Length: 298
Image (cartoon, rainbow, N blue to C red; front, side, top):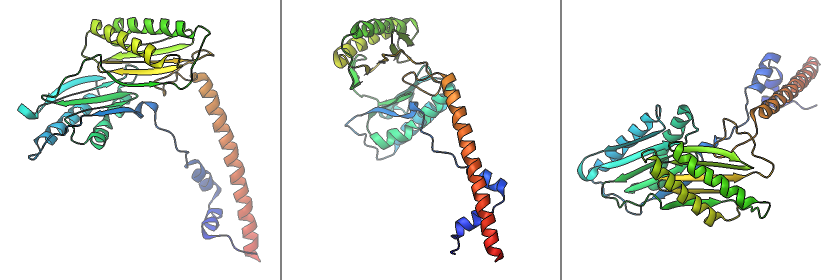
């Protein structure tokens, strides 16, 4: 009869309590929250010349200030540097993020922006939960209504009053964003919509920007069951759920998900099932250890 390998030999000789702790200390890998996922990046083709390092210092100071401010605010805009090295920048988090999640979202953007855009004189990196933007003095300004990015769902929904539902929901959204002072989300007859404007524009301009984004969504996405439109000063998104809009969990950003009650029941089932599995495995290892002990006695 052969002998077990050294790792298995050591495991089998551990006390039962250590076997239990060892098995429970190994957790499955968890996916990152949706709000940290990249939506798009926009980098100027022109790079700044920085022989003295002044631009880099100003940009680093800007990023540091923005990250610091994200611990207490969901929007902040500031300027660093002097003269030609002046850089204006801002960050904004989704209106439904907590301050803690806002900080987690923003804190990773400086490194990501540097990695993606290098020394571009202007850059914008958009995640699902937040974005960061900076421009070197003299950079050509773009219209607040200019479309920066769009994405439309591959699936379509023809008939069944889809277009009427979508258009009504988007109309409610456009008005709601303005009256909601820059952020609004709601559900309407199987449609889930969300919109947000940049934090430094007024309610009237916000409403106009949202209406422009709505028109873009209707034209660009057609009968797609979902869509996201990002303009320079605002963005909107919509999703269609034929079986009804599910309740949104606190860990999901960008679209609703199943209710917390259902998630809790599923979590309990997983825990109980996992505990039972671990219990059987511990018993098996103890049995194997006893067999090994008997073998050693011969």
